[in-house]
Structure formats: C-alpha cells, structure tokens
Length: 123
Image (cartoon, rainbow, N blue to C red; front, side, top):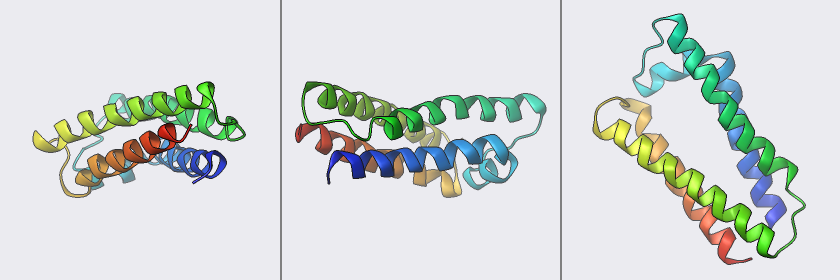
C-alpha cells in the first residue's frame, strides 16, 4: 500500500473514533463494557479524543510524505503508538475492564501496529 493510501485510511479510522468518543461516549463505551456514570467519566472520554484526533490529523496532514528517513520515523511513531494501544487495551480485556465488543480493541490496535510496521519497513 502506498503512503498516501495508508495514511488516509489510518487517519480516517482515528477520526471516526475521536468524533464518536467526543460526541457520543455514552453510546460507545457501554459496547466495551465501560459505564459513563458521571460528568467526569464523560469528560475523560472527550479528553481521549484529543489524542485520537491528533493522531488522525498527523496521519491526514502527512499523506503526501515521500519515502525516506522522515517517512520511516513517522511510521515508527505510529507503530509505537498503536503498540501502546495493544498493551493498554489487552490489559483492559484481561482485567475485565473491557468486555463484549471491547476485545475488538486489542485486535484493532494489533492490526494497525502490523500495518504501520510494514509501511515503515518499505521506507
């Protein structure tokens, strides 16, 4: 997959989740087994959108990046970011914080980690 396609897909996925966790956290989180039971939990979901939206912006704004050291470093950063997502969401699943649809998160982050790593190796 070329850099532009990969970064467009990556950015779009992160945009969707950033918007969903900002605008409809009480709809999203229960699918993962997490309750939004007060305004602080609601805000923390919206706060998470900062980082998801930031990754989306980086991916989308750097779609035209050319093969080379800078592109390699970008994909390494995305691999690390997605790898952290694997660790944290796997922990949530193993400790019964995430249940039900929550197990899709480690799979999702694993897929993005592998794809980011493969993209990095092509640089």
